[in-house]
Image (cartoon, rainbow, N blue to C red; front, top):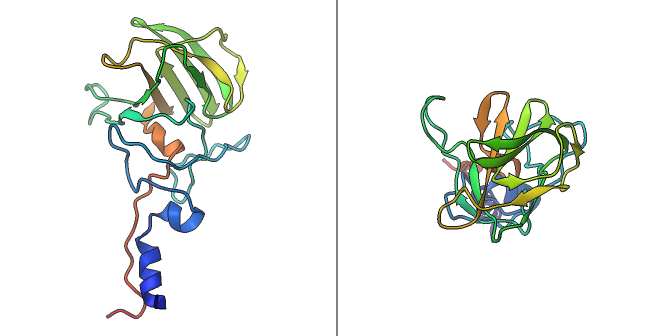
Length: 195
């Protein structure tokens, strides 16, 4: 392959493939989509989010094996309108273990409306919430990345058992998948020396 053609082929690859050899969806993951790449581990004390330019995903998936995304992030245009402020992950079976995607401290355990919920404060304004999840942990309990925080129970998805995962940065809901997948868009650059 000639160098300009090879360069063009490399530039067509998603950023994560070209730089790290990891698969990338090249954009938001649609409902039912599944990606085969693996996340890195958040370094203790880090408050960098994957949404920042050039950042790489740094959290673990809250379910293992890596779950299928049943419904993607679809926030409303205004905070008071209806929308989907998180993602629904296939939990496979009742009693599936849910783990903390990053280090943090349990900040809420209880029932919201009619579902058991657990929230973990990861620091730097980031909080993960999972529902429906039964947990025996108490508020204030520190948890490590990958540590079991509860078990998934029925009650969210009507057709299958799923885990709803929401992430807030301050008071704003953000796409949880940005912390486990490289969602940066691929950019096509012109060939060097092309007219």
